[in-house]
Length: 238
Image 1 (tube, rainbow, N blue to C red):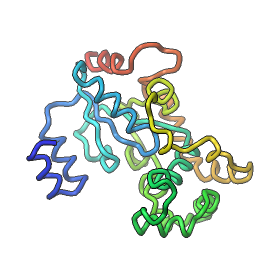
Image 2: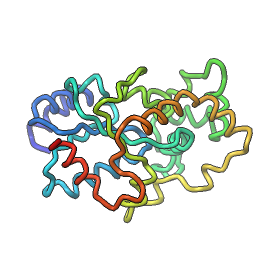
Image 3: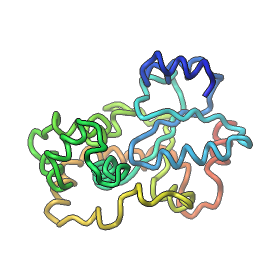
Image 4: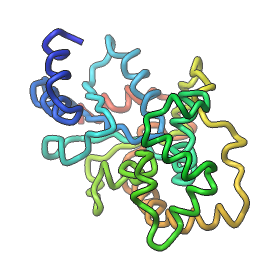
């Protein structure tokens, strides 16, 4: 980070800093919106690793930046993931980074895990009518960042939206990832009733994911050997 960027980052909020940086930068072919728990860090690492050879410009943003912050008609890249998996991963994510030591977490997250010591507890709160939004929001993954609508809007325009599916990205590029900071298969083992309840509560999210799969462009389709960066370069030319 340059000295100017460091000073700006100190003086501005995260959102303000990224908006200023975006508008001061050169034209970008694509803007990557970092959906939480959908492989965003891995996507950014791939883009950084390929940056020298890139003929297509991708500006990668932090979680806080959404479509309303971008210039009009920007081409957007996002990651999509099964909503139940995103929810469960969001529950465990803060715990993974502190190896389960609650005392190392910020106070709001300590309060969250004291209120919801298991993922089933959080699912029950989320599945209530209405859901316990204020308490769940202590964990941003289950609060402000719970839905793709944070990044795309409640009635999203699918034009100029491109996506990858998290599973495809991980299978191709996850070598060397520290598995200790990731949820395990056992974390996703829930009883049928709990899964059904969570699935019902996430029904609108499933509709949005299905809409994206049907109408947006997948930059990393299964059984396609080409590099997604090559595909984006062709799109930017066209």
